[in-house]
Structure formats: C-alpha cells, structure tokens
Amino acid sequence: MTHVVTAACEGCKYTDCVTVCPCECFHEGERMLFIDPELCIDCEACVPECPVDAIYPDHALPAELEHFVKVNAEMSLVTPVILVKKKPLADSEGDGPTNHASAE
Image (cartoon, rainbow, N blue to C red; front, side):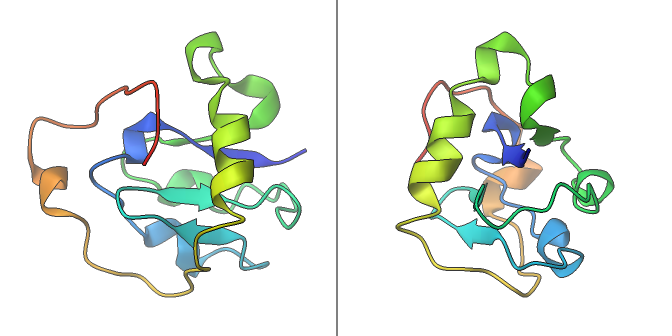
C-alpha cells in the first residue's frame, strides 16, 4: 500500500509532510507534491502534517480522487525528490484548495 497526494495540495504545496517522511518518497512538482508509490512504506507520518488534508491511503481514496494514484506514480518518475520544508505557494492563502481533476 501507499499514500497519495490529491487535489487539495494543488496550488498551495505545503511541504510540512516532507520533513517527517522516513523514506524520502515525496517529489516536488510546480503546483503540488507527489508520493512515489515504490518508496512509500505506508507509515502515515505525513498525514497529520498536511494542513489541507491532501494525503490519503490509496485504499481509502474517495472515488473522485482515485485517479491521483496514477498521477502520483507517473509524476514521481519525472519530478525531483524534496527533502526540506519550503514556503507554500502564494495560492495557499487564497480561497482554499481546489478539487481539480488533473494535476500539474
């Protein structure tokens, strides 16, 4: 099993989660983060650190977010690993997270 970053991360990209990940499985895209399903050990350390509740276990994803399993797997192959906390995107102080059907 793995955890999945979903639409709530898009446009805000809080990085609190990356500092608690014991296996360095987070990757940074331009507008959101992704989890490498091959490296995630399903420890759930990242879940309470996400201020927008964007991270789910893959088996507990709401139906409308299930496509993010594939998005995370694909994007973790082409985006760099992120290991340190960074300033969130400017959008994060807007109207809150969006539920876009696509990522990046």
